[in-house]
Amino acid sequence: MSYANALTSIEALENHYGQPVSRALAKELDHISEHYRAFIEKSPFVVLGTSGPEGLDCSPRGDPPGFVRVEDDKTVLIPDRRGNNRIDSLRNIVRDPRVSLLFLIPGVGETLRINGRAVIVADADLCQSFAINGKLAKAVIAVSVDSVYYQCQKALVRSHLWDAESQVPRSALPTSGEMLQAMSTEPFDGAAYDRGYVDYMKETIY
Image 1: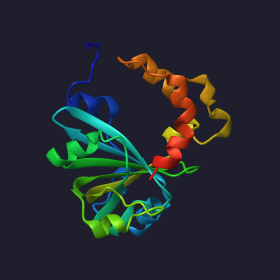
Image 2 (image 1 turned 45 degrees about the vertical axis):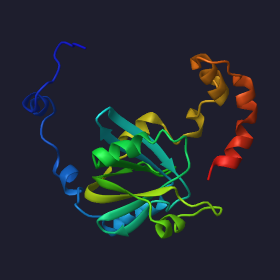
Image 3 (image 1 turned 135 degrees about the vertical axis):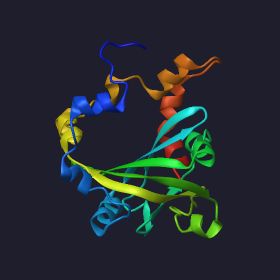
Image 4 (image 1 turned 180 degrees about the horizontal axis):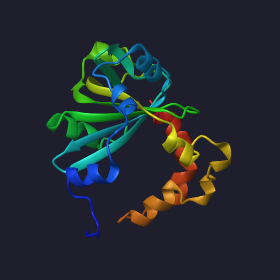
């Protein structure tokens, strides 16, 4: 990929954008403050970014608010729930522990970011402590915090993410079954998959 006027050095970037305002630097901490803890404990959704030999991965994680546990001011714990066993994020973590987290709260414009290093823990008692509906977490991702800071509202305001009128009807997009059927190399009934998905979700969500 080649573009004219590409910014390919730190010097070029800094000359183009200028220096950050002091407030943007002051809000970055090396630990979880009480204010940042309150944000994490209200969040029902976090995006987990990882890096590994095969490339990058960005994985959504969600549960009731407070599902990401603040263990102390340098550590957060994230339950890893039942999934499709691709475990792309986990494969990355065992080979490159660097992770990045992005927390969102419905209706709130600010987001919260954590950069740190993670380890995957399969301790039975710890997994039990994250149980929902009697189903244990499969493992727990323990993240040691290097930096934490909040992001201002501009991106979410520009996107109108929380505005009801900006919601897109699900019918405006291909269904999961339609997409799977189009990509499958074997016979696959996408309509049947869609019809059964609600019940499948109820049975397998935890």
